[in-house]
Image 1 (tube, helix red, strand yellow):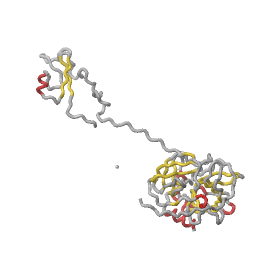
Image 2 (spheres, one colour):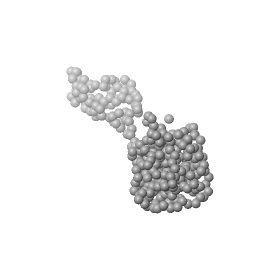
Image 3 (cartoon, one colour):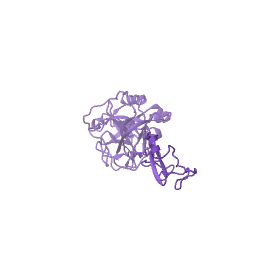
Image 4 (tube, one colour):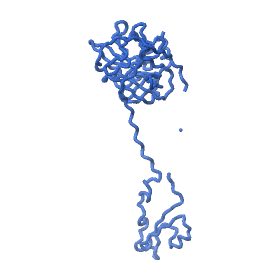
Length: 343
């Protein structure tokens, strides 16, 4: 999902002044069921063109009084041949069901029909919304125009100046004093409600630097000029490591082809694939541009902020299709990198 998309309208705006909001620290890891009919036999015997039905549970004397033997065959004549009008031996009795057909009143050929399988529920699809303050879009300037390429989220930190995204989003990006990368928190409809913040530095794990290990596809970005604190304006997501799985999460991302973010609520589960420490989230509507988007749990309805347990990335750089998204699991590697970025 890392490929750049179409340019997004809007120009650079100055960073806005600071306002009050308290920092949040890293969260301590949490530990974490045939229908069966008995005793009834129906036998039908034709004699003299008349059909006599007898219940098998009836007394033998009652059957004898009716002039019918306990055998289910037709009454023989004195010559031993069937009487005129009687069925031939081995043929079904008049009025009786054909072999293999259901009994009267039965609903099918089996006395214990299996229920029809229920149709599978449709997978969820992300919906567009106006955004939330602590999640935003990453832009780069190209030929004098802003071009969106990934998603990021503000993370609560001691200096209140860190955002988090996928490491693969930052490959080949020029940072430092002449950086062309900016972060726009709460961006929507071409508007920058919290300004644009210059990305000055990135922090990635050594395994990502050396091997581009999918299990370390995450990065912390230092944003804003020295002394300017983005978290004062937007608040920050609380970093959580070793999150128990499965659990419900809200995933947010900025598609390249729209000016609005999308979000989706659903279960996050572990990807059982040898060699990978990954989470998987099934929801449609997360195409290119949504890489780096946060996996949030325990989201506050009031503030829109929650605990960040992953970012779209990792296996297949976040997913080869827009309907399945992945994230590296946040474990000690994330915790150690956060401490280094916060120093």
